[in-house]
Image (tube, rainbow, N blue to C red; front, side, top):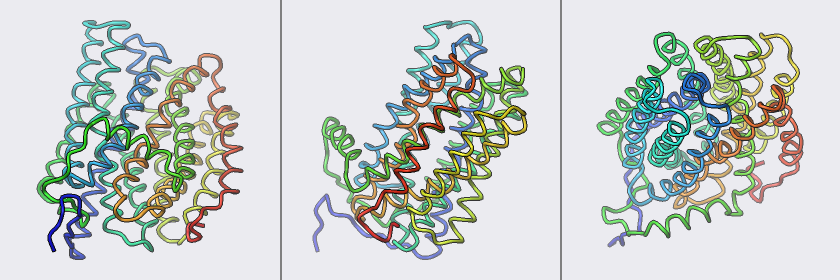
Length: 421
């Protein structure tokens, strides 16, 4: 039968091809996750070294998150037209180029060639430019995983994606802490190299997704794409799950963006030792998240809502410990609670969202899912750093207060599709 430009073509993959494709998709998520968490681990130290205030460092992340959240939804839709593989490549190569530009801007600041507000504006602009393109990888990867997994295995597949993100989150801070001994900028250049190598592997070895569009996709104006992206955030089928994800990432952004300042001031550390300590704490958090996703989610067939109802309260416990702990060991170890709770909640809300729509909308919903961390990071860094300037523990009391009503909301939420419970 003749196909119109908007109809999907079917490209069936063998079992061996699916395993190979899944490995490459997970590798892409690992490399991007590594680069992102590496940046968060060293950014507070880098910011102070070039003379930026805490709230300016938070502003860099918040500004780029606004762009990332909108671009993710657009790229998710584009993956329906251009193909998952092509969009993943755009994101990986864009991340590589953007990281090099961001690192070089910091290098100019360290050399004294740009200072003060001039440096701050340039850092914001370069990070926003990077976010515009790197936002393509995660929604395309999420949609690809949805394409090659059936409904019964969807939560497990999303758990693998979350586990890959956690692996990247472990490697990133570890690499950042080790390379920061040589130079605070070296981790950024290494992250760019790793992502570029991943792009080459995807380009040469990743098969096309089973859900592909024809070679002549319908052209849609940028204005219409933006409108479609904004509307996607208010789809009643998954807006509740999006709210849970955004709230979770906002709280995590508060912690992630203030932890470097908190450890440096509370423990009396210099820039390099701060990066190493933050890296250790983030590794503990990511390791706990990996255990939740690779062991609990894969072994026990919990429904998506069950995962969220267990994960959110566990995260709240971590926030309470962080706000009240006096000993340095507890300040680091409590991140394990946060990580384990996130490890359960992430595949829960991700799989719930993908299961709420049909096969032809997986790209769109994947874009919204990928944008949820960025949406949380719009307010999180600004709120966290602003509260931190008023009091060291205020950011963590704030996250605790956010999670009390969120826990009640999750337990009372009753999705329309019964299998989500």
